[in-house]
Length: 276
Image 1 (cartoon, rainbow, N blue to C red):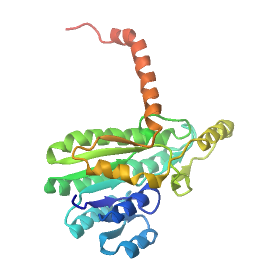
Image 2: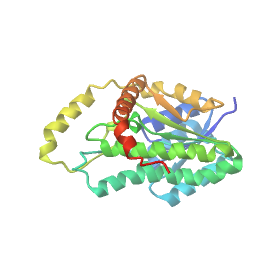
Image 3: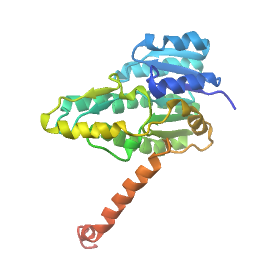
Image 4: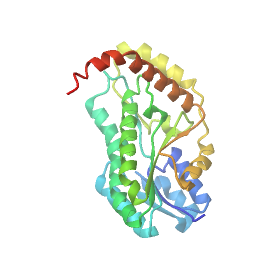
C-alpha cells in the first residue's frame, strides 16, 4: 500500500489530533493545521519531515487557500483532505442570536467550503483524491438545545452528498464521517459556545444536560483503524458511522419519519393537482 498524504484541519485536539498522529505513526505524511501554530509544534518535533504544520483559521478563506496550496506544493500531492475543524453552539432556538449562529456556520460550513474549494482544482489536476468531512450522527437526528449545531451538520451532509456526485468523474471520492458520542475535548470550553440564557429554559436545559452526561462515550483512540479502512478502500462509502450506537438511533428516526409521511400521504397527494 502506498503511503498517503493528508491535509487535516483542527489537529490541535480531539479527533484531528488522534487521526493526524495515527496517520503519521503508520508512515503517512500529514499537513497538520490549527488556529494556533504552537498547539501543534510537538508534531514537528516528533515526526520531522513527515509532517508539515500550518497555521489555519478556516474562517479566513485566503488563509485556507494558502495552506492547501502550500501543503500540495510541499508534498507534491494531496491524497486526503479532511475537514475536522468545528464547534458547537449551545442554546435553545429562542436563546441563540443570529450573530452566534452565523459565527458557528462560518467555521462549520464556510470554513469547510473554503478548504474544499481550494483543494478541488489541485485534486482534479491529479485525477485523484479523497475529501473527508467530519460530521456527526446529528447530521441525521437532532436534540433540543444543540439544534443549531445539528442544523450545521444537516447542511454539511447535503453539501458533501452533492459534492460526491459532482466530482466522481474526476476520480475524487467523498466520505462523510459521522461520529456518535466520544470522550474527546469537543465538550470543552474551546469547542463550545454558549448562547445567552433565558431563565424560562433553565430547568429544561439542566434536565437535558443530565441526560447527555449519561450517554455512553466511545474511545477516540479506537477510531483510527476504522478510518484507515475507509481511506484505503477502493470504493469508500459516502457515509460512515463511527461508534456502535448510531445505526439504531438513526434507523429509529428514519422509521418515524417514514411512518409520518406514509400516514399523511393521502392528504399530501391531494395537493398535487389534476394531471395535465
